[in-house]
Length: 149
Image 1 (cartoon, rainbow, N blue to C red):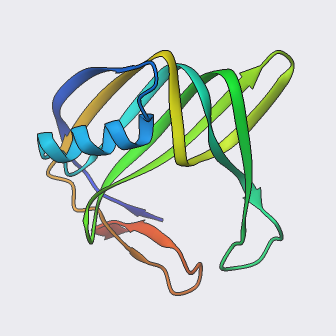
Image 2 (image 1 turned 90 degrees about the horizontal axis):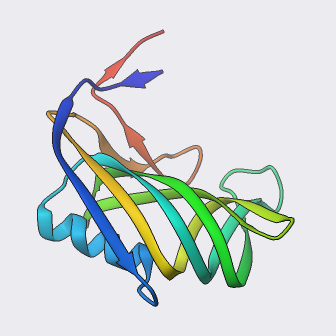
């Protein structure tokens, strides 16, 4: 196990409006505000996008299985914010539902807001987290300043 200790910094309440891309809007906001580390919680609705619902097979590196969704889906989710090699890296996980269908996974590529998505962003100060490619998993993962175990 790895960990980093920090403290709460600034807190932002953000509204992503109808037709805006949630992923693009939050990445732009985080960059503009200089948020290096933190998390975001969000609720609202999406009219369309793409979500990774797991790997095609249980191998490393994973081959993601994408699902597209269109037509208005309720959403609640969470995103971690860590420093990446090209600036802040946001990693989103969410559950989306429409009628009796539910998809849970990693929002990627596009997540277009339907009416609004409400977002609460909490900055974490003094964290030692970094993000780099894990040689075993083959994907970018967070690495922390301390280890236990």
